[in-house]
Image (cartoon, rainbow, N blue to C red):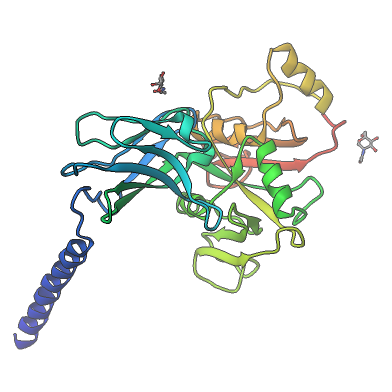
Length: 329
Ligand SMILES: *[C@@H]1O[C@H](CO)[C@@H](O)[C@H](O)[C@H]1NC(C)=O
Ligand SMILES: *[C@@H]1O[C@H](CO)[C@@H](O)[C@H](O)[C@H]1NC(C)=O
């Protein structure tokens, strides 16, 4: 009886204490003009879509400017200004600027609207209220909904420098993935035993089912090699892609690579890039149990409903035969 009371008492006071700390901490920021967004606030967008990043004032100082910047991902020390406004006029900067505007849904609204979202718009943004000495700011994350896929050179495993990895992703309708995107993909089931470059120049690989061949650590997690030399070290790549306005369809062969190219052309289309196939698999539910040529010369097929004889694995995914002899059908 005694023990129970003590435990309960402790639990109760501990809870009160944490709550108090949370309020203290929040109060400490002492935001006078801006409203703090919820801690986990995140805005979701899709490629080619629009998004609004909320930033709302509690009250308006007599003279102020609002400055929106992109904080991450970022080259070290470079401030990526998107837009500055004094409430009337707006100035736009950089790659995001021309697609940015203030929503102004009401007189206290400083929210940022972005149109024509691209893969590289993914990241964290800061809304800063500049008011003499008392600048204050809030940050909000824009997450582009997408899919991460590992990519290997046609010359084999671990053949790509950082720049080559970046180019390889671009050729597949993708960008190098950020750590956050890889992490998200890992939570969604990505398990891959080859290390690949990420957009910040670090090298990682995601493991859900630990096995001796995939690192010493026997816990599931993202294994890290840390930052690597961008021109001397060679790895695979983790690419990130999202929806696009096109669509992927299957053309029944059998085709050599050249015949497949021509077959697509006759349909007013072209061979799909690897990123486009992943996007169609993920967002349009494309499912086909036959290998098909892609533009890079690899042969793959997308499975959304795993079944006997379709690549063996119990999980949905895009299966690969790798880079095949182009004169094979
Ligand atoms: C995005 O905004 C633009 C301009 O306001 C509009 O023309 C377009 O239809 C919007 N796109 C989507 C997907 O809502
Ligand atoms: C590809 O296949 C063709 C025909 O089967 C063969 O003649 C050729 O040597 C092969 N090329 C390579 C690089 O294996």
